[in-house]
Amino acid sequence: MDMKVKRFNRTERVIGTTCIYWLQGRCNRNPCRYLHSETPSILSTASCRDDTASYHNARKRFHISSESAKTLVRRKTGNDMFPPKHTTKKVLNRNMGDDRERTQVLPQKPSTGICKYWMNDNCVHGDQCRNLHSWSYGDGFATLAKLQGHKKLVTGIALPVGSDKLYSGSTDGTLRSWDCHTGQCANVMNLGAEATSLISEGPWIFAGLPNTVKAWNIQTALQLTLDGPKGRVLAMTVGNDTLLAGAEDGVISAWRGSSKSNSPFELVASLRGHTKSVTCLTIGAYKMLYSGSKDQSIKVWDLDTFECKMTLNAHTNEVTSLLCWDNFLLSGSLDCTIKVWYKTEAENLEVAYSHKVENGVVALSGMTDPKNKPILFCSTRDNSVRLYELPSFAERGRLFAKQEVGLVDIAPGGLFFTGDRTGLLTVWKWLEEPKVAASS
Image (cartoon, rainbow, N blue to C red; front, side, top):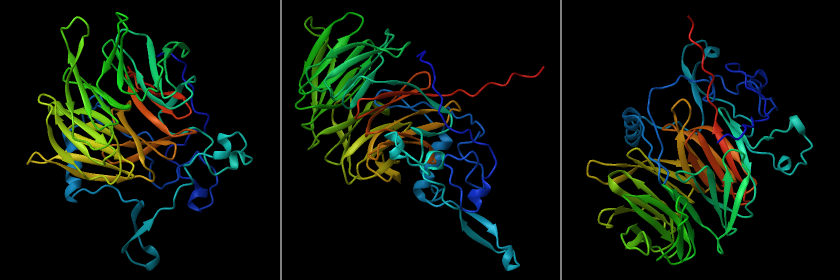
């Protein structure tokens, strides 16, 4: 996209300098130009690793180095634990006149929540407000564009091959196309019903509607209706040359290419096993499909045979999102956890780590930043999206919205997208670090 980058209207941080007022426990600036820690922040310019990475969110694959994978599995056994909730450090107890070590809990940083009065343009505290006056915090990314037009929740985006348009679907019953160069809405299509999911594969766009999937080929202008689902189609993905759609009745419909003249798609299977709505789908290694449901379970399916290979029952509430990270599976739930699953030597999937969040998880997505570090996006029910660096789950930043963010997705070129219940679709971009010219 050629849309002009809009940088954050915030104070630049002074790298490596600790705020003296924070040390005294009385800094009232948020954000503050200086560090609120006695060690360099993870948001500062850390050294770049050589790990290669790419994400997989429904249709995209994400790889990490073998060393990072080993680190995560070691944490399962307790030999390399994740950081505790409170930051601690070892200091010498010189006031005691000896060299005994004691543990000091570092002071908590000021609020990282957005000011709700500022959101409504009526905060009277200005720069003295302890809450954020910004739609995000964190370094290295910026808002590229805000696409306004939908009236309800944005449920999916599509970037079909051969098109210079971005497509978005919404529960307001419309499919909008946006010019990637200007950010202007180019067309609005009335779908006649709410679109609860939207994806693309090659030149095809697929929209999940009640009891059906609508398909468009942008190269041939062919339009199709794929029958089979019962109820709203809440999740779709493509893998192993198969289109898969999960619906409210708990059944996953599967279509494959057909030589029949009346339709290029043929319903080849209905995957039954969930007892409630299928809410999320993702494709993993070895032609495996993972499905999450309101019945609190995750099922693993073989895409060659369409058989259910195993059922995972670690969550205690609705499973809302699934993401494949190399040979790991990440699952988000309204039980306020993100679970990381790994395959054992016995070919079973077990939880390697469970990360707790303050509110229920709505959506997961991920990509790598310009330094090739894997970043996990986690939307939660407090109208925010947290950015975590993997495998440490160290928070890199946060995005805010007026209402719940139901969509988090990624695109080539360092772009990522958030869509909320107001109908706003925001385009974000990682900022490339300036390259230093080699000296002669």
